[in-house]
Image 1 (cartoon, rainbow, N blue to C red):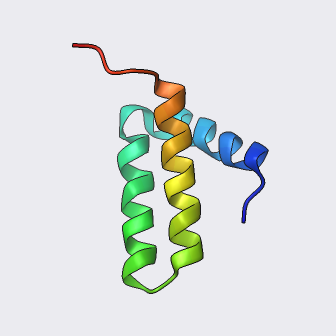
Image 2 (cartoon, rainbow, N blue to C red):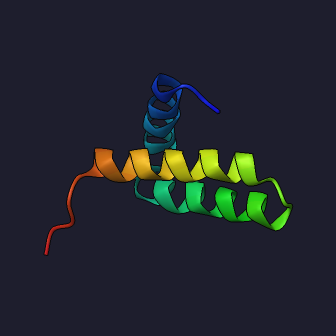
Length: 61
């Protein structure tokens, strides 16, 4: 399991690199890992995805 500080570092770096698409890219990575049976890696990508959602804040309507 990736340490929490590293999860947030990766999430921030992905936002810097991919902008608004960063969350979708993390979800895609999680799905790829799941399809290959790599459940631990998929869980880490989901954790990164969740961290990015928290960083983004609530949806605006």
